[in-house]
Image (cartoon, rainbow, N blue to C red; front, side, top):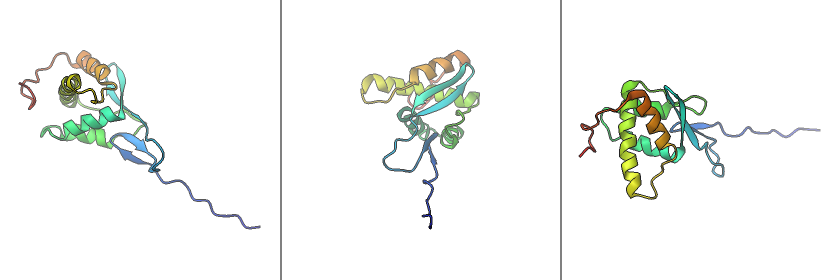
Length: 132
């Protein structure tokens, strides 16, 4: 009696800090954790994707963007103080957009903003490109 060969499923691939199985009919992991002084804060994938999209527009955010793109699901995104400051500014911008756009993903933004504010205190983001 011969045994048929069984192939293993496709290897997972990372997409913006979430794990995707590569199979078209499966949903990728829907959350990403960001490390803060008060603990990891979990945001939804759509929120993470939107954060990365905003980070890519900032000339001083390359390291922060890379931290989000390089992380897997087993470890949180780790940022230094400058990266957290940039992230907080992006979150403030997204929060302002969310008030005007019902379709804006907001899963976890408030919790992340609050954790970053508790860690960093108020920051002056008046020099950021979107400040008015």
